[in-house]
Amino acid sequence: MRNLFATLAVVVILASGFTVSGQAPATGRAPRNADEFDQMFQQIKNWGRWGANDELGTVNLITAEKRKQALKLAKTGQTVSLVHNPLTDKSVDNASPFEHTMNAGFTTDRYSVSYHGYSHSHLDALCHILYKNQTYNGYERAAVNTDKGCAKLGIHNLKQGIITRGILLDMPRLKGVPYLEPGTAIYQEDIEAWEKMAGVKIGSGDAILLRTGRWARRAKLGPWAVGGHAAGFHASVVPFLKARGAAIVGSDAASEVTPTMVEGVNLPVHTLLITALGTNILDNQDLEALAETAAHLKRWEFMITINPMPITGGTGSPLNTLATF
Image 1 (cartoon, rainbow, N blue to C red):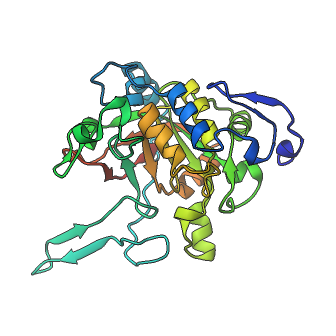
Image 2: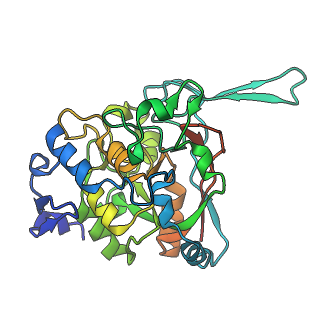
Image 3: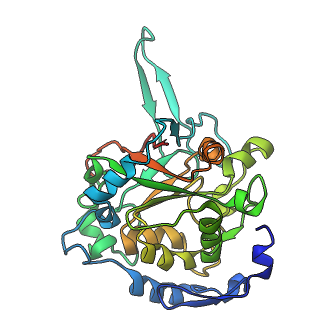
């Protein structure tokens, strides 16, 4: 299996119609620049798919039947938290440390956190990322992003929580390493190779979690500037994720490889997922315990429970995501 990618020479046809070949250099993969990115964005966007007033995006794919399917995966009752304990020390990957202050008497306390970024476990709302001054579903910036919060697409839309099937994509295990080095890109064929190895297949309504081993590497070597140098998805995988019907996407960093390999575009994976498809993203999840549990049980699918704080107009929320086996 470790040698799979050295010999892979098949042609991969992405759902968008973009074509790549085997392990061709990243420069040969679309989107390579802003023009190709825009073409992909326009081809795959879900705007209007669930109506002109939709604010849920791909969460619409998590049906009652999907939730019942997920419940059946809770066979042993064993739970695993995917949250990384809040980082309270400033570091190169934690510009805004979590603040915990005790009040007078020490029986109450105050929390303060600026959670977007590359340190704190959180879920992005659909108003968090815009493209050409529009959010998901084509809403104009002025109609959504205000000084009072998001008038549409805020995190409060997920107050009822999310229960669905979760799938772990453990790329270090696939490649036989403890963690991926920063800058390692994950392509469609990597995902398909993992599906074959793990005996799972991404389906409609699933939440997928990409493990790069970011936290394992940090524990061994210390923090680094994850925002500019991280393993993650190449933007070319997003049409594939749409075709499979992924409802939620997450990782142990920010889901996308950095540098992004898309000239002139910042956060291409975030923009394609959140703004084009309407897919909420779980950032900075700690997937180390999940990976150990899944490997022990030889099960890489599980029930996942995602419960953000219902802050009206919030651009996201810290949360404690749970996997139940």
